[in-house]
Length: 594
Ligand code: GCB
Image 1 (tube, rainbow, N blue to C red):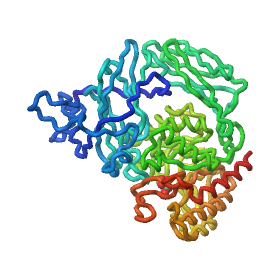
Image 2: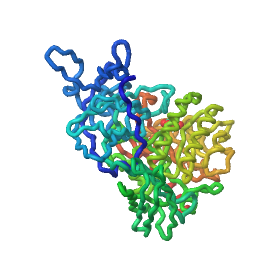
Image 3: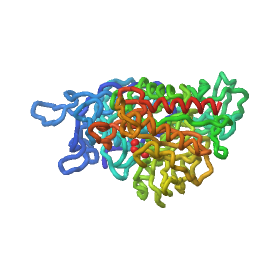
Image 4: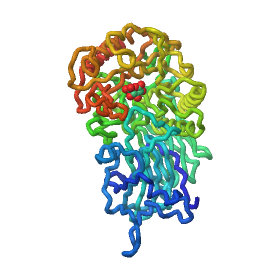
């Protein structure tokens, strides 16, 4: 391997707040199902040859009229970034494979500054090249990644080429089988951030574990001048304190707080927080709250709460694609608020960082998850490492978001020894990175007659008894049969139902025993609520799901047409009857938990 591959830079906390050059907009693209721009005819990767050249990332033009070059970005069509390719180009709706993206831009390069190229998400494998040189490769379709480009970014014109490949593989996270659309491409923001030579790389400013009287955390510098005075300033809370970073650039924060207004869905108070070192400073908006489990109660700021939730995919049904803008994200959270939710499950992977900032502002507690979904390769160490990296990236990115109360390490993973080890290690990792939030996973239930049993041994390692159950949909075809089930739950912890639901085609009306009708879904919700209300430790739920979403697994030609119809809102934004059933249940619960 001759081409020099840059290390991926550690994620910078709150990178959006820096001086950034946006690279969003139209990128030229080339669809490359045979990876012709990556491999030569002997299937050797061009970027691993002696010259390191020959691939589409060279972005070459013929030097004379005789030169053979079989691609041309300048004459290729464009895709909007952020945005998946499936929803933008009809013939790419089902495409899985490689698409090359190219963007030319002008940069001003200042002496003494460092430059970080940031991608908020590319699904799934991204090879990134700047001015024809490889910066590196990143795997993971929903987490942000960065490359330091100091010394590589030129003053004046530059070009970036990205090979985005969304091919599914058994050993990846997620694996080959999921119930969502495998939207490909550069799906979230791209920009270059300018930071000083020594910059504030990371910080955590949160209440200490179960302690409303202390703000605890750290500041981490990166650069040549690691020993500095760092000042944390929260003017509205009367806090101004200076700490000194050690030789590794780290300082620990522990400050008593006197009178602050605690964050909650009813009072989503955010404070302006400024972290200033001698050479850098960054501002954020941060809320302060405690979250803990006491017996079967979930205590928010010391008070028992019921999580009135709904599950959400990172998809705008109106676009038939991944969310692209603040407006898209706000639409989904506004729908959740209209249902009187105080909580959302952001399934089944890392959502946009902006979604979490909106949840902070709008007052919604959040369950945040990594795509450890279904049948992962439990015994492959590289698969574990990938899952752990994704979990670490999620926790690092969102550690200052008060809205997040739960880190979820996965969904419906089948019980086995290797899986218990894998998931157990993820749970410990989550706790080692952040001891202030709950750690959970969406488990499965098994049945014996009318008994639904929750005894997954992973439950020992989690803070909640959280599981999916499909009484009335996958179990039996009659909503009125739901109430015969009783739950036998092994753990004495708060019960939070992570999923239940059933499909309904919006506008299809029939009796309550007819599958796919709104009446069936409505009856299913009524009976689910009756059944679940018998669980005395029930402290929350996130039924499946807020809106209809696209899935290649959903093939019924009349009722589904590649849509999972379990949404309470249709693909045109219309509320189904069951929406109002859940809303009135939440209205009652709100009074009960006042
Ligand atoms: C589940 C999965 C979810 C699916 C849902 C369904 O249990 O966790 O990803 O979409 O069921 O609709 O079957």
